[in-house]
Image (tube, rainbow, N blue to C red):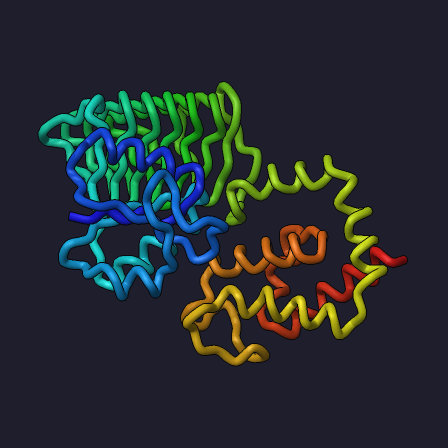
Amino acid sequence: MILAFYGAGAMGREFKYVADKTGQWDEMVFIDDHAAADSLLGCPIIGFQTFRKRYSPENTRFVITIGEPKFRREAFDRMTEAGYHGARLIHPSADICPDAELGEGAVIGPGVSVGSLAKVGNNFYAAKGASVGHDVIVGNHTRIGAGAFIGGHTVIGDNAFIGSGALLKDRIHIGDYSVVAIGSAVFSDVAANTTVMGNPARITNEGAQGLLYAPSRALQDAAVPEEKSAAEAVAETLSPDRIAELYWEAFSGCFDGIDFNPVSFRFHDDGWDSITQMSLICRLEETFHISFKGRETMKINSYKTGLDLVRKKLDSAKG
């Protein structure tokens, strides 16, 4: 049986080590449309379309090795819609009760415990030393960080994120797309789309539906003043025609094997998901040495609007 890792980043390396420990896979491969290398840890890295041509759903299983919860769900859906089934990847040191249920694509890290009658959904990931109590129910695409503790009979929704070292009291409910920050102690229910932090945990962001790692990226951008000077240098040397040419190279490079109209093609169309969107944004940031913030990324919903935004940011750098 073949194991495919969807994503060739840091989490991909960690999951590969878990897979090595199990000794049950005849071959392993990474799926990544925008990887800079051709291989990782001795395994080939190939694009999604190439993967589909080479590996059939009948003898292939997969796990999602993308950290961002929203993107994990989209990648999982992409694989299942293509007919593939998720693996259940369990480190040999994990302690899983015989009557616990694990969904497709669930990954259980070293030293994790899953209690009696616990049920975890598809694309679940529990990192090193996490503890899932008895009768706990966890939804799909949810991540639990290293050393986190989930009390018995607790219910956690879909696409939630429980940070490392967090403590969740028994018999509480954590809503869909909620975030429990690192080291928090949670004693009561957490509504959907809500971030809580501290001991006792308090709400820090209600109705949040953004990317989990966006705040750290924003802080990183603010801490690197060189990025502005680099953007100024690029702006001084590029003509409008050259900007359009470089933009086209970045834009079209995200859609290998996908037919599209560069003017009318938008995020909700087939093939243009958030993974592709973020890949494009990263390419544009690297090409033009500019940084896109929050709502700006949503403006890049077609070739034309994205190009206009890049030109505007470069004109601003000139000024």
